[in-house]
Image (cartoon, rainbow, N blue to C red):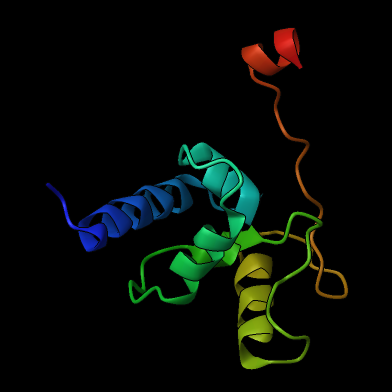
Length: 113
């Protein structure tokens, strides 16, 4: 039987895999990341995984709040760094906010709501 730590590590890796799949110049919300990882409703888990990230190659900066706001406190080093990284990829950041892409509807959602 797997220990809880092994299970948590597997969930974290699923979240990191989704973040790695976000294309340069694109953004996704924490909830969308969790949903794509097969963990609907676990936006806070996605945020926790990213806040403890130690992989310098992980494009964490492509993940923002569902309303497009950068989650770091305004003016903080993390806030400024995320804004710089997004702008370097061509994402417009205005007052700490980016334009969120419209969420695609899955076939199940289209049929069943």
